[in-house]
Image 1 (cartoon, rainbow, N blue to C red):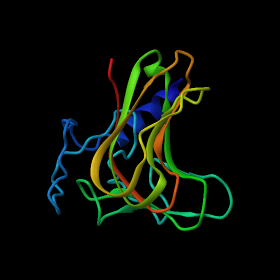
Image 2: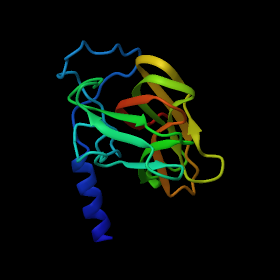
Image 3: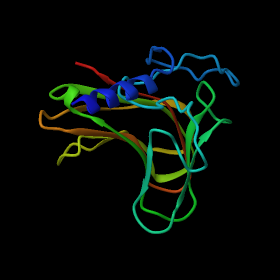
Image 4: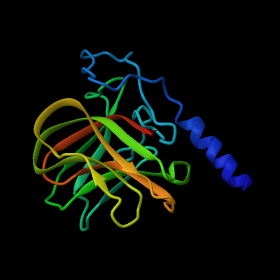
Length: 194
């Protein structure tokens, strides 16, 4: 139990990047605006993608794909942030069923509650399969996707909601590219809405 408390304290300290921001009808910050308020869910690490890593490494997050050779480039993109200094950027380089960026958190604090996962997202050249935000309680019937973003789109808010089953142990939060193209994500937030 002592180790769990230490780990929880470290995770909470790592995710305290910035303040809160009203999420309704958000306009995109002006180009070059690096002083815009940031959001980060209490349970999420590097939710604003300000922590950078080596190429193909996004601190706090895990890259996955369906199968086969590496088919996606992932990075913190300093040239295309919604706000701040970076955003997450994924590019499909080879035909593939899906590629995802995921973070897993403890579901127990949210048991029986409705949660909302939101993020600012945009796309370039995404095919009909789409660029989608998701949340999953890792139980049958609990995977929820946002509507698929396709083509070329400017920054916009995307969100998904899930009533977390009482028996859920973990939540997976992330974004997935189900077709060709590029997708960006920034300012991910997980919150209780009931």
